Length: 227
Image: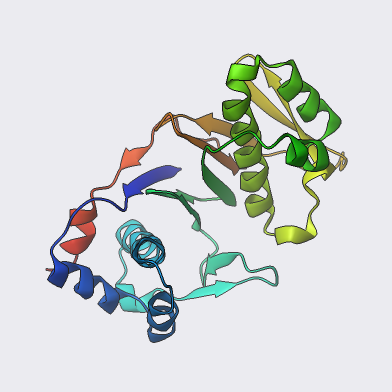
């Protein structure tokens, strides 16, 4: 497994920014241009190019040979390849990308206020109790840790919003976390929380054992790709 994080606030030249559009499909380019805010454009563009760069390097193929498709619920995958899986998430200034040889889901969440009403509605009873038993000054962190874990599992499963958030639960024991589901026959994936930026919660879910390391990817590397 390989995990990468990229800061959209890294600076590159205007010509280099425009050059990144050459790596994406015409359809993706049009979708990016429809975003109103520059940061939304950057998250979409940089995320797509980062994924392409990592796949190209990992499989030793040209960018033009990389074709993305999506399942019925919108989860993207690499067409014609069952040996490499990827997943992408972005929030605030960070883009988080994971590559694995088995199914993977990743998520990053910028921590805002603790939303107790959402926790009561979407968390399992066990998760909600864990949040309420936590000292109030840590509610914000715990709420987004749970939320990012849930999102990473849903993205791992590739079922989108068709999968209720309270249909599975995470159990916390110190720094370790484990997943519990109603499906006793299911092979449970590994789950892991990460702390890269104290203002963000990050999680990975995969049947491949997670790495302990996250690699910071400078935007300039993407800007220099293929030169």
